[in-house]
Length: 176
Image (spheres, rainbow, N blue to C red):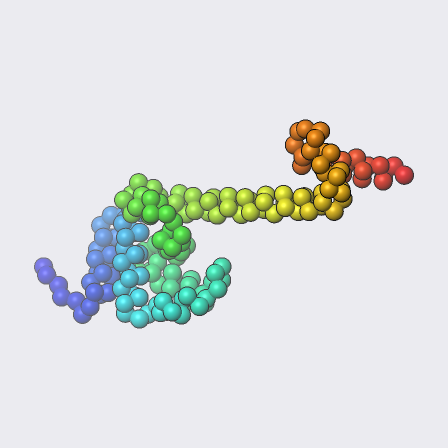
């Protein structure tokens, strides 16, 4: 039986409905369908324009995000959080991660968690660098350049020596 549809969106809805009735849909198929659906919505004008999206500051949630994800999830017969995760993978995931999910070599949840771990690693590295810079500034305030040069001559890790010296100094203040 051949059916005719008014537009691409109607045909896509029908195809997804038929697929989900017949079998469970894989993460790769869900990823590809979400990608296609979002492309059709963008072309149809239901989603905000590229210019409008680019004006939203990074890290802020657009008011229609979860509503859009809910609409897409309803169409795909899945949870809206899965749609949000797919969109995050498409936006922030490496090409390798995206291809692995698209080809059913990696689950959506695993890819999402991998991206979150990478973000966390970047944040921890940034925190470590900020802490080190603060320690250097504190050492420069506490010690004169000559004393800092003397400490370097003692050998060992300068940061450890400075930390030890500060700890001993603070302990000495408590004893008084």
